[in-house]
Image 1 (cartoon, helix red, strand yellow):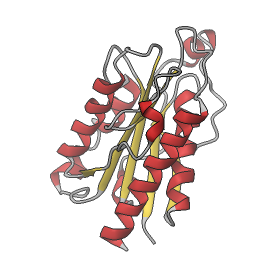
Image 2 (tube, helix red, strand yellow):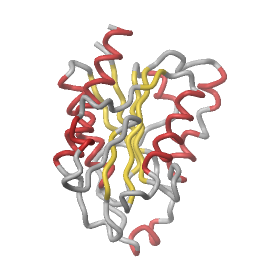
Image 3 (cartoon, one colour):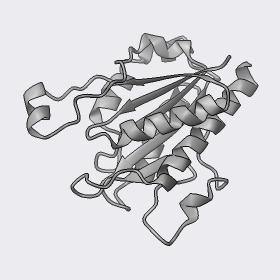
Length: 199
């Protein structure tokens, strides 16, 4: 059975919610799925004072275990149109995996959130995807088979490059059902690709 890792960093819980939707989709496709997060690098007092969501149930991932999975879907909030420092710090430790080609030919995907509709979601997705391509991974995005991303009737996340959500400037907006449907669809597609490649 194909093994999928949903690997995320979430400051306020939006990406955490999206991660579990990705996992639901991957399980629906028949994969074995783990949801894990990268370590927080912000000092605990600062995180508490800034109302970070510190009660996340997902275990902390290690870099070495990335090689144990057939597919990895990486998610993070947007930081000025790019990947968060927490996720970057984690992936920057994967030089040994890169050097020995441990992730070559595996399936990869990306998902993201931003405060505003035009706050850099697509560039953040690309910053994740570039990392995964350097690892030798094959990318599965979010095709227009997820019709929800085409809606002009409300603010929606989603791009051909991966599932997204809009958190709002104060973080009060939670992922909508359309956003979560996109995440589930991408998870299903990633798992289906991994099953085809790895059985």
